[in-house]
Amino acid sequence: MDLSSILSEMESDNEEETERRLRQYNQENSRTFTFDQKEEDKRIRLCRGLLTVLRRSVRTQCQRVCLETLRILSRDKRVLSPVATREGMLVLAGLAGLVVAEEMGDTPGEQQREDEDGKEEVSVEALKCLCNVVFNSTAAQQVAVDIQLAGGLCRRLQVTHTSCHEVGLFSLRLLFLLSALQPDLRVTLRQEQRAMSLLTSVLEKTLGVRWVGPYEVAAPEPSTPPVQAEANERLMEVMKTLFNLTLANSTEEDGDHHQLRLICAIMRHVLMLKTETEEKTEEAHSHAINLLSNMPVYCLDVLIDLPVRGGLEQHGGKNMEVVQALLDFMEKRIDRGVNYKEGLTPVLSLLTESSRHHREIRRFIKAQVLPPLKDVKNRPEVGTTIRNKLVRLMTHVDMGVKQSAAEFLFVLCKESVDNLLKYTGYGNAAGLLAARGLLAGGRGEGQYSEDEDSDTEEYKSAKPFINPITGHVEEPMPNSIEEMTEEQKEYEAEKLANMFDQLSRQQVIRPMGVRPDGTLAPLEETISQCTVESEDSDPD
Image 1 (cartoon, one colour):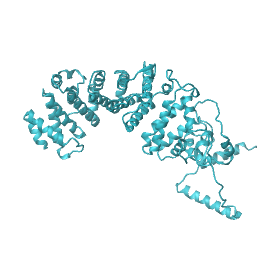
Image 2 (cartoon, one colour):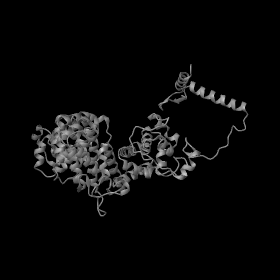
Image 3 (cartoon, one colour):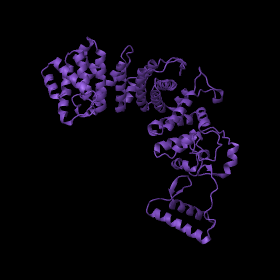
């Protein structure tokens, strides 16, 4: 469809013909996401013309078609200048049914829409337009803040009687975009709009939450159907928005601790639920884990402290169902072998902090991840157990992934270097120990119980023969220098030293030593320090 013909019809105020041509344009471009730069000026004029039409009292059907065209055009961030203005955003907000400013009360489109059928379709299209415009235009983001669009969205979400799923969904999505793209807005949403409480209420209604204790949700019955697709879509938008809001670390507000605990309890419930497909279930669980990773550690006791449902005696009366679900999720993400940075590190971080601050959780996880050591014939990274998989990640190419895996195992070992080396070997643990200044041994700064881990008889008998670097008992290797003369040995030693010296001078490698405090330093510095200390200790 030629844009010039559409523009000429719009200028002639022929509403019916304009609507027909726009409808045809929408059909032809419904899946268009890249646009011809040569027609950029025409698309800008079309955006301006569409806003002019939408300001007038036109039929609801015409409004919907115009908004659909504007939604298609808003995929191109270069043509949004007419829309990313106060006037343009107010028109869209009014058609979306959002009360955001006094100026909107007299918006013609709003008055007309209230008197006609199909207002929900118009509202949905307007919300979709706002999502695109806010996502693609920084100017629109600032205008949205100025006209208090987020406040209008919160007021919309307080209306519980809406029967249109898409109105709620795109209201939530727009709130998510604003909270993601405007960090300063997060504190305003928490403090002035009470968005945390509002979104918690939306979660409760979406999931049909039934409370049986202060922070305990009734367990789903075996016959409970999976979460329906529409409810799951709203659920994930709420969790993403709450994730953004909890990034604003203002947990000292009145009643905020209570609200955060409620969210933790609902996230525990989410992790116990299933949706219509395994893929969507995993996606929902992933968002729940991301949100829990933002929670203060003192709130995480809600995950295991279930007075009504109870727990097992060997776990101190705590309920470990959700911890087991987190471990299963972690192993599934490891086995997938892709996107560790975004897919695996959040659950590793959550398990690490939970273990660091909650003794029962650490003990439960360690019993599964680091059980008493029996197999010392194979390298720690070889095998199919969770320990083997995590040790392999300790040498992953991504720095964040290997640090997360190493920190998790270190915490399970109560930050004891000796215990960590027992399960991983020095070679795998060297990166963490160097970063923590623990190459010389010792413990981290965490506070843990004094109970000692008991070694198995198999480990005790094999311990003298374990190579501390590889962490396993190696097969005896033939000694290549046994048959050499002393002169040959001296020659090979000098040759090796010269090779190291050459590589060092060329800055291919840099020999390092360990300071007394366990940190790394250039070898010449550590040798010089040892020489000085030796001289100081000699008697006069």
